[in-house]
Image (cartoon, rainbow, N blue to C red; front, top):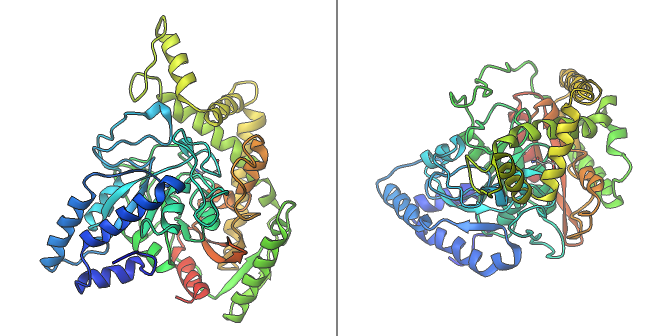
Length: 469
Ligand code: GLN
């Protein structure tokens, strides 16, 4: 086989079963493609040295007639999800040399389902960013146009799937880090309901918002991977059980459009046009489309950047140069901390720690953090209520197509605006998916569907219908 561009996870499983090719051949094809293209794209930070050995193991199990959902499928893993015995750095210098002592639950489940853990992918340091330019290990480039960013923070995983270096990949999504790069790279990216997938072994960014989820070329594929990943986990007390969100409304193909939000300033002409085409397509598929009034959505981004920095400043306190990775010697232990953290964290991470510490400080807690939490409750309430009437909310995934490398690095606020459409789902814990919706020239566009709590099923039905799967 020469490349994997025509294969999906589903069709590959069928082909492996029929012995059209082996897991070793498939894995070797990915490794060869990575050798050819990765110098340019920098999607992978490492291909694991036991990938072919894992493939041989899968081939033996296939020969024995075993049938598991991901048996023999190579999957790439974002560099903040632990894989036992492998280096995991979250794109940061401070974790250089850190070897994961155990598997994250997500990786453990992939392994149990027969997947080959192919390698780890580049990301914005500690998942903070929207362009994968904040990695200590160099930028990742968009495979559709190498002068542009792949989105972020899971840019390496999105680029790996888009460039046909892997059939699928895992990412993490705190405010859009799966969906936004999926849109920029023209692939499917899915964030489950908060609590559906265990965060055990995911390096925490903002624990109340983080979720692991898959990237793939089709909705069917992300569903297959999600079915492997999901479930209550005793190692993560925030995971939910199957019956946490009982089904209250039958799927009736109704889509709500938060019109003024979609027409926010900064949404490009191409994105607006593509969005109305997507809307028409849903109508021609028999969906009822109606406007919904969600006035608080406009405050999502402000609330998000307060909550996320507050939680990050607390989560990142553990990187003190004693427990993990980098250590720099000072004159005393306090100076050790200062030096290690000063040299180990990049600029954006330091900015967010300072912001987070500020919004949590005793004089400003009420004004910022407490207000952001109140806003979070209002937004969640508003969204949960609207899902009593409609099944799905449709918006573009991003306000523009992929921007140029370096275009927004000196202006963090304009970078933060790239997340305007993705953060509400994290704030309210809702499941949300980005679907490829066409091209503007050579650049991919994406639309985003969001469903009520626990209603991943609605996203998969509508996603498949939209993509004609
Ligand atoms: N771009 C957003 C941020 O920088 C989202 C990141 C994410 O989802 N991890 O916080």
